Length: 540
Image (tube, rainbow, N blue to C red; front, side, top):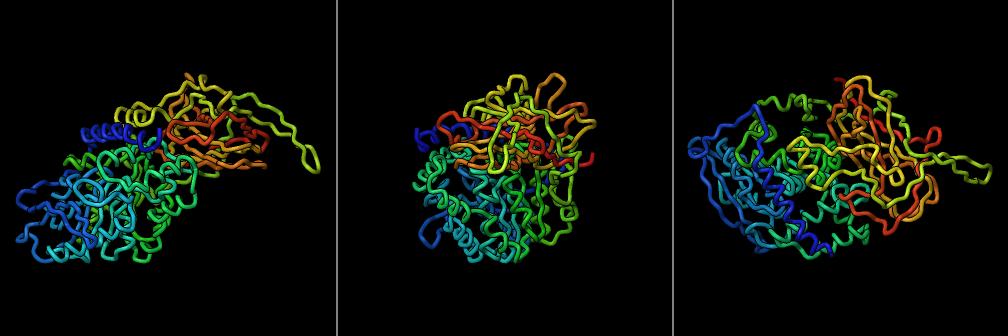
């Protein structure tokens, strides 16, 4: 089945996930007032662009008597496959607070004309045209514009701010910073999520036919440099210098269980920002944190988004800019840090792991001497039972029901996976950030994929999946190599007395597998070349 046919079927799955999101409220101590009916007016229209394409939009105008004169602007671009009505609840709150608000469906979605180009240059020009239209047709102060959005709308907002100096701040929720790492982390294409995007786009939008070819190229590792250039042009990371030149205040929010735009792919973009910035991390699948606020339910992240925009456009004195900029949602509440915690090189944070596999002594000749290596020998491209879970279902169950992926560590087939176990941790160990697994590979033939799973193992030898990471190499390697594999960000507390486990295998249902047949893989376990895991441990 080609990508077009599979994607249309897969699209139904994402619709079910989005529907379930809308029924779940996120508890919050912040509830915005809702005197909408007296404080704003709204109208729905299709705004023309210079090339004749009309963008379906909703414009919300604050009460002119209560808010006279030129008013600041909030523009909200809809998420992938949705339309301009997505943000009506938020638009009413912003309008009631004195903002001119414009919600719109990017071209190709909803009732907007044109085709979906995935944050193309035309999509960014459309935002500039919308700002121009507001200046000509409303009492908008087009020199005070904020972009805000979820998912596709988040990425569009960041890109637009890099191209239009009238945009003074951005709130980007569940968006992307590096599209290359989003679509194919470490060259491992996200098979399930990309298929869902193309599927929902085909059902609810009008995709540029070029996208189908690009997906096929991505899945088959064709035209690699062209694909990377295409994604780079659509990555906010590529324009971070423009944002820094103007010191644009940026608020980003991403969720740990988001296997489309996880926080890890946003990290480099966030780290390179030099202006005012915040990184809001929370539990949940893609867009879960933001969705309740779209339905008018209490939402901590939207409360912070309003405070952020109020500060930078209205000059309101809010606590948000006095907090440490990085925050993690945890079982103990929200925690704040000045920067994203890094995996430590301290001995207490680097675990040398005991291999549970059979160790093989391998003799290899060099020019000068005979070297002896201790290796773990695996058969690749066969499932070991170690897994990130059932795509979509496992993430949703964990986020909504608190049902994580569990693994009986004895059932992982060690013919197909390397399994390692640490000593028990002496005290509660809090992880905040991206763990790093370092793997020493022997030379290998053909393409390989490594998937590393980090577990919290209890006294019954049941592992609870904390996070995972992936790495693909398409070329053979004639020399030994080191793979420092960053796992997806997590906020997790390992109880005292539990152990850390790492499983490394060669296929996972989330990702395109590059191999077409089984192959042999050897992981070094010689002295000073053992697999290790470094954890971003924070004080309790």
